[in-house]
Length: 230
Image (cartoon, one colour):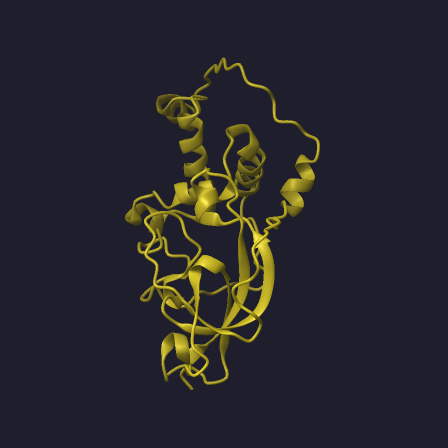
């Protein structure tokens, strides 16, 4: 849903992104807790991280802009809890008010084997694919102008722009398929280097470049004679 406020590349008009020196990953204890709870619960709920991201993209734009990052995780977790029948919305609201409620659910506990390693290091997204790469290092490619109605990892600011293949990252989980819970749907992933001027015009620094990891379905080969903006 990157034609909305949820675009992963951001939108103009919101000012510069600033980061304080030594800015911690978590500013409050509850942020770390919700991060761990949600990651640990993926297997319990039978969902993927891409699916969780797609749920956050359903947050109405006004609320999305006002909601801190990890509070969006809370909203996604609440969505899963109610969808899976673990608790009702009224029960969640009661908990938020400090009330004690009894949940009698016949559920197996989350297995602890390897759980801490997964939370600390994550799991690899690399997957085996049989198809040969469509693009080679040094190829000029164009990011396709795809306007997905669901979750995508194709930023709006690179669509239609020319770049150069600088790395072949092999098969990786394809987020658009994973978000729909239709398996991994692996596709080949490439690192593409774009000049700042190609992305933002002649006002950008001629020496600046931006590298974006893009899956094969997001790209098309351009003729050798095609020239990128200087």
